[in-house]
Length: 569
Image (tube, rainbow, N blue to C red; front, side, top):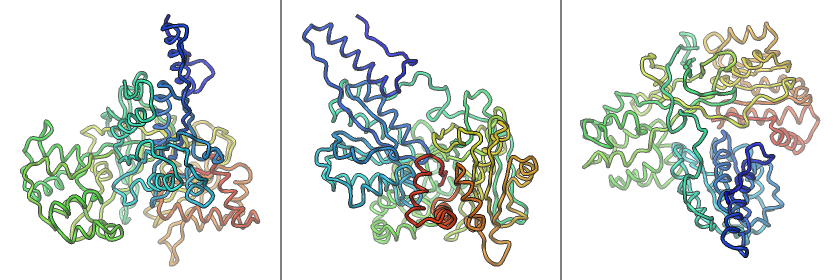
């Protein structure tokens, strides 16, 4: 007898369909063995995700699909939607969460995080759990949200099914190893067998096979007298099979600056022609390795190898590391504490893989067929007696269009325009934070959405830093852009920022929110986004005549209903 199959058209979720297929297959298989065969009862498992960009949610869905086919009954929860009163009764819980800003939880994980780390969380003696933490080791608070949750679960008496795994930007291999360990520890049927994720239906190009795209256009948006350089970059996606929506991000795989690589080779005592990994050391450093960023992990290892007591002390002090690492790059270690590398592999062992850079997309596919646009702030500065350059921003800024640009898309599941085209939209995006809102406005224009649109934009000087001014003026004239408030901080004696404009227009802003307005923020997470959030609370409290607690509840309700969304970095 052949195994039954639940068709895609059946009224079940992906997780339910995967479990039912596995369950029915097992049941029919058991019936073939004998009349008295016993079907194993499916094990319930809750999978919670916290995500700012969608990576954690995507992995949670993959976990569910895999476990659902191996004897489990998985349920996936957005942390914001999880009923915390159920936690004490859970037996098996998996958490996947990222960290953003200064070690903060993602927006949709903040309420769960604060509650769990507070004083009201129950004892969890019956719970087995595991945490998969996503992060970026370029930041000092690497995977902090996942680490905090893991430590708190242990403190509440929960038992790790599998010890926490901290994943860097290139997390695929770590994820697969963690999931296999979870399967085995939980007693999954056929644990670890086959691929964790089915590959059928996947496009030819993607994360594991970036598309070699043609760069079509590349120009500076700032005036000649500006202290900034912001590039508008247009890339062809013709023949890629890719599609995207406003709110998504473009992943760009850069190559390292050739002169920096030559300086690094010289400092490390190599010619660059040494053979490694089937290529030359020079090419490996140029295309495959992160040769600039100085991470805490790298510093600790280098300190031990070099025997530098100064570096050892810095590596043992988090604040000292932050101060030391600012403006320094990996090559500075070789200058400060020279190390004799016997083989090129010893140098590569200190370096992480060159990770893609994500840029908020600044175009609508309806306005620019077969193209994707990004808005890139070029990073250049001097520090510790040397010139520093951002790897990807300079790669794009200096690109002539002759060589391909390797790209793929990162699709956001949350940072999207409202489904109701009549809903008002408020957008706060200073500097390059304007990128997704250019895309939003192009989309609203192309779809003839009737909802009102309000943009708060800011930068240093109106004369030189007014990004996309001509296009914004056209949208104002046509009625697509209902309101535009600008804050150019250096054009008057006292600095003015977008959050100041929000307070000035507080009464009208609150009215937009009260009529169902969606509120979006894009840009710097560490300062701007926090200041905007504070201003939003202030506006709601003052003009809604609410207490601080009531204003906070109002904002929390906006977040839960996906009316307050942030794309921050």
